[in-house]
Amino acid sequence: MIILFLIVIFFAINMGASGVAPAFAVSYCSKIIKTKSVILLFGLFVIIGAILLGNNVTMTLKGRILPEQFVNFKTAIIILFSASFGLFIANIFKVPQSTSWATVFSIVGSGIAIGHVNWSKFLLIIPFWILLPLVSYFLTLFFYKKIYPPKFKNLWIYEKIFINERILKKLSVLAGCYVAFAIGSNNVANAVGPLVAGGIIKNIFSGLFFIGLLFMFGAMFWGKKTMCTIGEEIVPFGLVTVIVVNFITATLLIFASALGIPQSLVQLNSASIFAISHTKNGFYQTVSHKVTKKTFLVWIISPLIAFISSFLLTGVIR
Image 1 (cartoon, rainbow, N blue to C red):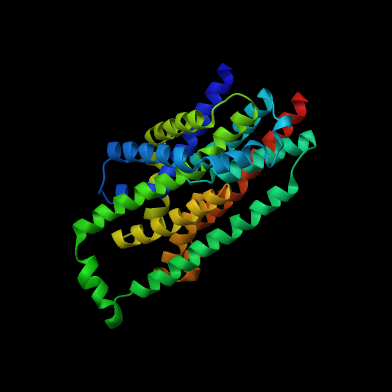
Image 2: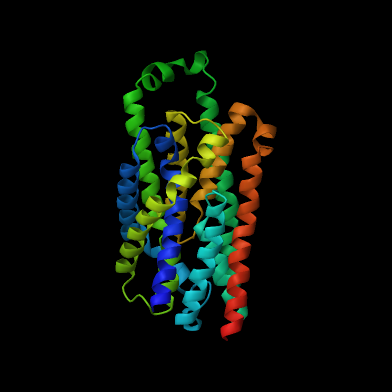
C-alpha cells in the first residue's frame, strides 16, 4: 500500500506539473501573476472541475477500456507507475505532455498482456485525439486572423478592447482558471479511474478531491520548469492571445469530459499555439522550430514508454 501511495503521489505531481503550463504559462511568464497565486488558483479550480465534471472520464478509465474485473491491486500499481514514468520523461525534457495519452496507453499495455482490451472503446477515443486538436488549430487560426495584423476592418477591436490592459490582465487570469477547471474535469480521472477499478478507492468523489489536491503540489514542485517552454520559445504571447487560446482549448476539453473521453489539454493547447505562430511567423517556420520538433518527438516517445512498461510489467506478474 505504501508503494501504491508513493506512485499515486508521483503520478499526480507529474500531472500537475504538466497541466499548469497550459493554464497559466503566459500569465506567469508575463509577470501578471505570481507563483503562489498560480499554485493556489490552479489547485482550487482543478478540484472544482474534478468534483463537478470528473465522473464521466473516471468511468471510462475505470473499466470501459480494460474491464475492471481484470484490474486488481497490482495491475492498478503497474498502470499508474507506467503512465507516471512516461510523463516523468516528458517533464525531464521540459515538454508538457498528455496525461490522458500516457494513462490510456498504459491501460492498453496491461490489457494486451492480460488478453482483455475493449478495442471498440479504445478506437472510439483515438479519432477525438486527432480531430479535437485540429479543431483547436483551425478555430484559433480563424479567430486570430480576424484580429491580427491590425487593419482598418478590425481597428474597433483595438480601440474598444485591447487598449484596456488592466481588463485584459484580469481576463487572462480568469482564462487560466477556466483551463484549470477543464483539467480537473478530465485529467484528474487519469489517476482516479485505475484506483477505482482496482478497488483501492471506494468513493469516486473523494478520490477526485484527493488527486486534485496532489495536482496542486505538482504545480508547486515541477510547474515552473514547464510553464515557459511553449509560450516563450515558440511564439511571444500577448494577453489577447492568452484569452483566445485558453478559451478555445478549455471549452474543447470540457466538451470531451461531457462525453467521457480522456482528452489531452496539452495537445489542444499546443495546436492552438501553433496556429498563432502560423499566423505570425508562417507555417514553415512554426513546424521547423526546434521546440516544435522536440515537442512532437516527446509526444510520441512518452506514451510508447508508458505502453511498453505496462505491457512488460503486467506480463511479469501474471
